Length: 528
Image (cartoon, rainbow, N blue to C red; front, side, top):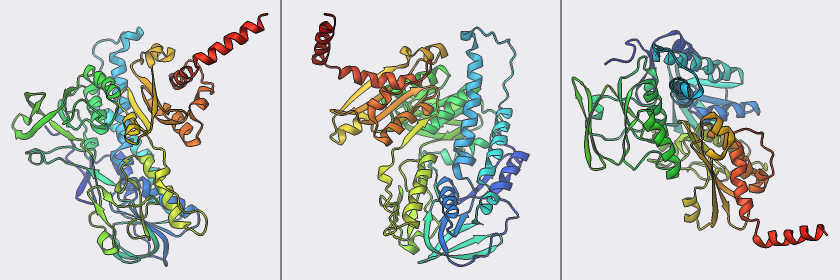
């Protein structure tokens, strides 16, 4: 079954030809902003303070901050400005997730006294069109023209190191040779593809192609139950697809606490997702009826035929074709090797974002870009250098329903580091607003270093966990600890009250019998 437009807008990816489908006004607007066909690369004017390869989040932030400080900056992008986040990641996926949640709310409307008449129509083509429209609108922020106006020399084409301080750009308007004082590699990562027998022959989708769909696949197999796989599996199930989610480990979201992931798993099962975890010996075969998947799950053999296969098994760093060897930059399967200052093995060249980070998040790339600026443009002895990536307190969120958000250490991490922690969990079914919203399956959990009130980590499972985790991030960054959150007034009724309630468990635990006995004697004396 063909789910995509037969027309296409062709843009050269770093690795292969990539399609922006369908060829409609929204995608034409997008391309006009982030990869204009008529763009003529500027003539280099002297030596650049910093040349950035890659215009995803890390590259864009590095370039725009450097330019705003008065540095002479060049930014090179072979594919699409905005990188994965704008084009095939955060922006389109959150649009789909929001639409899927609206559909699910309609189906569950009777719980709130609403009776939806039969015959209500659902239109996935309209959902995808809305996504493309909003993506095109947002793309103005990452456009070639905007960054040019901000003082960045933008080069569309492939950039490659050719010497100790030179990068050659091969573009449609001819080749350019740029010279630099410092450089930053921000080429990101791409979807990994497992060596599953028959997968390549049958064909598959990744996050780089799934958002080109214009119709709903009636049957879809999703390989990988990490964040991408879970978010999209749940969304497609809510749209009405028959979804089979295949994962090699037990359950979903293997990096999260098991009880946190279990809550999301149960909701996904209610949404219609068929989970085949502990999957072994997965094979794919293309047949007349569709794409056949055979897999062993918990000792039982499954034979499933689907219309599309979506692969979400991680990311592979984009290290090819940029001349890293020519400038002595070491890299491996995990990406470019950097020190805590984000210097590569060539001290004049830095890296940021998915190309070198274990945190594959847009906000991580943003934070790392700011470290690059500080260390590359303001080195010691100017007094601004030595910013360290090790000091980052990194929150993240998986945008399923409910969401799972985390910051800092898990309990198992603390034990591995030999740190004694006290862990407290408060369930949402004891939070008034969560009960009233019908969103009371979840909890907040906090890990506090024993003998102190220092917060080492926190996990929230809630409808808006991504919005709520920031309070713990701020407390950890500022060193305020549990006492700060416990002493902060939270508006009632909100789901965020759970943050205060969970640290109050710590406060109650440390209200010792000895203290209470002393107070009772005090109060008795006051009654005399």
